[in-house]
Image (tube, rainbow, N blue to C red; front, top):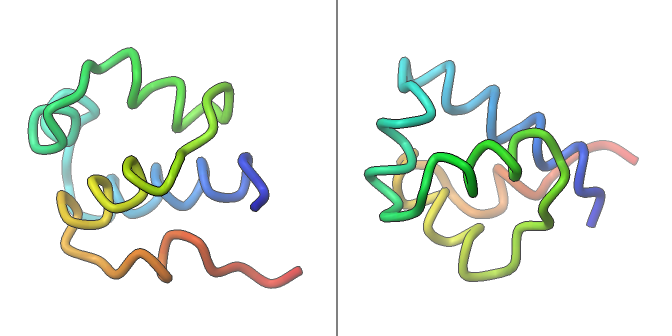
Length: 69
């Protein structure tokens, strides 16, 4: 799993959905600092966080994880 590519996809989907970091963090029930670290790629998203992000954004987990190698 490429942490930076996932980070960029999380941010892109969040912006596409018109959400701020605070709004998405609230939907996920995590702190803004956790979400910020995920979007910067300084924190690796485990399976639980990927599931929370996908649910909060209304996308499939695979959409967050898929990228061309």
